[in-house]
Length: 43
Image 1 (cartoon, one colour):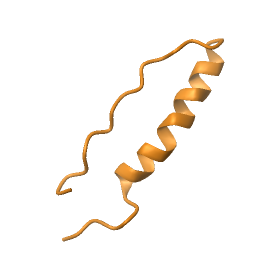
Image 2 (cartoon, helix red, strand yellow):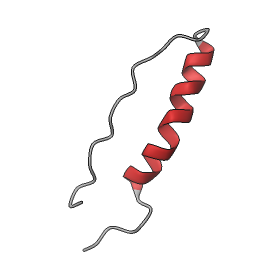
Image 3 (cartoon, helix red, strand yellow):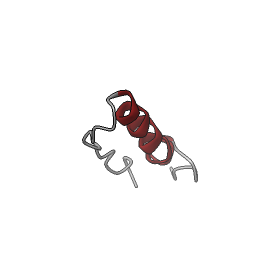
């Protein structure tokens, strides 16, 4: 079965930078580590 064009991994890669930026702002500009989301199963 093929993955749809937008799946959970694509959504995470688009959303994660904003979440990390928000956390950085809450911490006064700290530079938190950015975790990798890996590849989608079957990709």
